[in-house]
Image 1 (cartoon, one colour):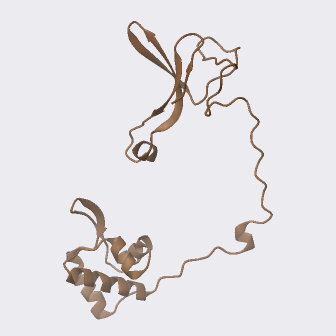
Image 2 (cartoon, rainbow, N blue to C red):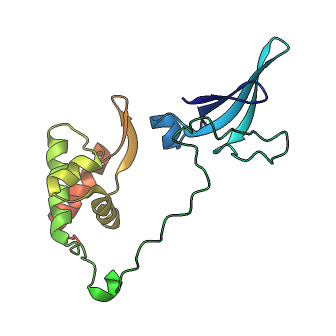
Image 3 (cartoon, rainbow, N blue to C red):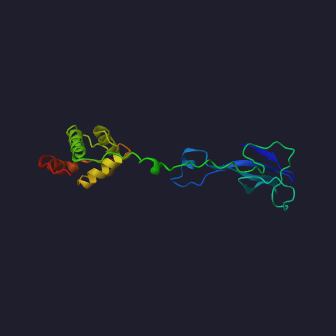
Length: 188
């Protein structure tokens, strides 16, 4: 990361910070949040640190506790001077929805449910509890809409762990309901 010598002593350095929240993609998959500036200095035999923020101030008329960066030093890429905001993007003449309608997905029929039930029955015959994604692939649909259709038909996938993998699966306990639906032909 970039570091700049501080005029009052110490060093300004950019760092990434981790919030450690479970669902935070920046922390889980990336380096973290930032980079943010911090002032580091040595005092009483210890390294001290003060959080500054996203940008360093560039003016000399600031109070003493705020950092000052001289204009003689080269600026890092993340540091910006007072630049005018970019020009706004030109507005389109017509909205997309006024111009033409958005494409709609085809309305599901009982045929997709029947194909899904047959696919599940085939997996079960081979001794496999299929995931919702595997059934959707066999039917040729996306898994979410298919899952909603199957739940409406009374066949709902169950969250479970198999082989260390958590997934929504159509378990063997659903065999009887699947057979009833296929034999009766009551597929809506």
